[in-house]
Structure formats: structure tokens, C-alpha cells
Image (spheres, helix red, strand yellow):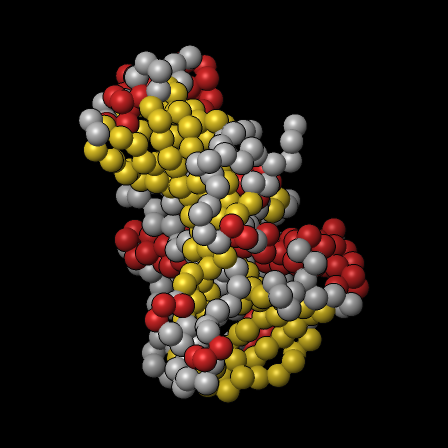
Length: 420
């Protein structure tokens, strides 16, 4: 198989030929990364342009539409001649002169005949691939189409044999006479970002890890299983259990948030933690009693910094009946193991209210060192300023701390709830 696609009259540029490429891997990379797909075709002598979903499988591009729509109807029989474009905008180029303003981009244009996929198995496979385009694993995590839905959906297959890349990736290209002009010039980068998932009403599952935007392993939801406690990715299914376990103002006493008292308030608290997770700031877990499946509390990573390989452990609340059991020690041990041994963290730290002596003692028992205090670090719910004590543990200190914690758990030791 050739490393390049064939150059044809339709894929040869009349200007800026140096921006063109027919490299197979370059074509595939842009099609796989892009979501903005437009397909152009002609109906009764008039041009049509439609946005659509696409996915590449090998050297075939699959397009999605309605069997009763213009494109689906036109493609019946022998197919429809189309021109497909997928573009990634990387930057806006500001020049000193108006005519030299430009954009940095990567685009693929494909010409050919898009033919309807009629074989049922092939159509189902293409629709699964289209579904996985928005998150690998989504097809298995959703209902496949019914017979009626399959009939109402048009899936068109387009060969990539006439595919070409056009790209620009450099800076300002002003004329020599314009370089002395006083106007600002440069490139404004453009990136695609995904916001936090907005869970639909009635959904109890946590946002899945395969959603675009949640790719860093530092914020990837994982289950951590222990003998005294199981840490599950926080989900709306935990809301009622959290309300029951944490219906005690004392467990929220030193946290920078008011206690949620209703289902709606707790659901919004969970939503807020998910928003922080998708911003890359926090990774929340529900704490579960393994023997009964009872929800007993919350904990999380926060202030996650993959670049400097550090994170905090906090927002920990556990129902009072599980205080001074093995729950807190084991939960912290699992969180520390995941941080140091899986993520490769160099430092784990804790913030706690200066007034929370119980929390400070519990953190110290974990093997952390008090690093200092941040004065007026945040407002408490009552409007007063909180001075925050900072504890930390480094990767060099972790092996000895791990040994002590494992020995404590082996003999049934416990630590107090931290409320940190």
C-alpha cells in the first residue's frame, strides 16, 4: 500500500501548492481529530452543503445522515458525487496589512462518489464506528439502533483515493515595506476545548472516562478497592446515600462549603465536583462500605498539576459512624498508592483549617510533614477568613510512609476523619 494518495486534477491546487500534501498518515490524522465536517453535492443543478458526522475506517470515510434527507435521497442507487471537507483551525494570523491576514489550519478535502451502505452488518459496524468517534467505547455504552432507526438512517461510504491535505502553520507573511508599520502583528492560537459534561436529568451514572476532554490519567476515574472501603468515581447514583451518611453538620464543620441538606443541593454539589473534574482541577470519589454497598462519604484529588507532578488530597467527609475505623487510613493509603505508584507524583499535599486539630493530627499520622501556613487562604461559609495549614509528602518519603500505613492496617489501626 502506498504511503500517499494519488494526485488528481481535482486535488491539485492552483495556488500555494507548497501547502498541499497527499500523505496518507497526514490525511488520516486530520480526519480522526476533526469533528467539523461538511459535504457538498449537487441537486437539480443547484449546490448543496451540509454539516454531518464522519468517521474514518481504514481508507474509507463514512458519512451520516437521514435516509429521507437530500443527501440520502440523492445517493440512492449508484451514490452521489460529493466533495467533503474537514478542517482544524489552529490560529488566526494578524498581519500589518489587511490583505496578508490569514489563518493557520489543517484541512482535508476528499472527492468521489459516496455510496449507500446497504448490507445490515456493514451498516451496523459503520454506525458503531460513528458512535465511537465521539468517544472510544461509546458504542458499547449505548443502545444499538432498532430496525426502524436503521432504515431511517443513511450511511454513505466514500473512498479516500482522492484525498488531499492543505495546511498553513507559520507566522505573519507581511511585505518587506510593511515591516516598519506600527500595527501589532502575530498569531492568535486557536484550540478546541471541551467543557464539563452536563448530566441529563435522571441519569445516575458518572460521566464516562471516554468523553473527549477527560483524557489525562491524572483526572481519569478509577475504582480503588480496599478491605474497609471502596472508592468509586462519584456519580449521581450516590446522591441519596451521601445525604443519609453525611446528614450531620459536624462532618462538614471545617469544609469551605455549606452542608447540602436536600437531594437537589447534594446533586448540585456532585455537579460542581464534576465541573471541577472536567476542568482538570479535581477528581472526586464516593467512599463505599464494601460489605454492604453503603455510601459513607466523599474524598478527592484537588489542585491537580501533571506538569509539576503534584496533587492535593482533600474534600474528605465521612459519616460519623465510620470515624476511628480503618476507613480513613485505607482510603488515604489507596489514594497515595495511586498518586505515587500509578501517576508518578512527586508530591502529595493536604490543606486543612488551622482550627481543625483532629484533621492535622490525622494527616500527620499518615506520615505527612507540616510545611507551613497560608494566612487568609479562603473564606469560610460564615464569612470569616480561614488560615490554612499545609502538609505534604514527597516521593522520597512515600516508601517509609507506605510501610507504616500498611502495618497499621494489618493490625487494625485507624485514623480519625480528616474533614480536610
